[in-house]
Amino acid sequence: MFCCSQNKTDSIKQEDEVMDLIARLPEVIKADEYVIKKTKGKRHLFTYIYLRPTNAENYYTVNVAEDNGSTYYTHFHFAVDPITYAKAYYDPFNDRYVPIKIWRKHHKEFI
Image (cartoon, rainbow, N blue to C red; front, side, top):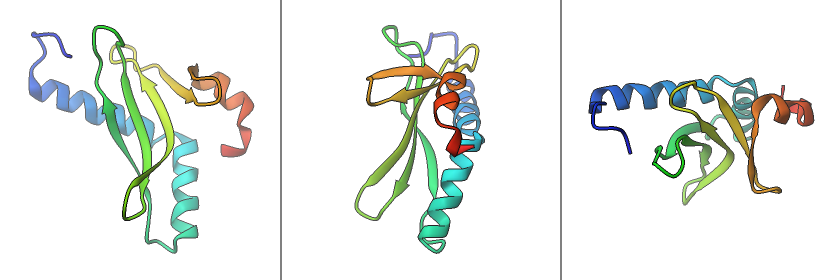
């Protein structure tokens, strides 16, 4: 939840910035180009806020997904700090978030 001093307009603006930050990642752009090519332009990736910051987890959870007609197929999960805008990738195999720099060292094929 947002603190009471933050109004709705500010939170919407911040959410747009967070989603744009993730959408501009080279890995996301490349994956989107791949999906567009493979589906002959019928599908593409989009970002959305999955979870907003709470007292327990002070970050946005942002998903990058593809709408396949009946469900959203998630390609990436990210966390974004609402204050510093630091980004982390969710590693499903180890069930933890990893800083983008670390993730990129192990996934060079995306960039």
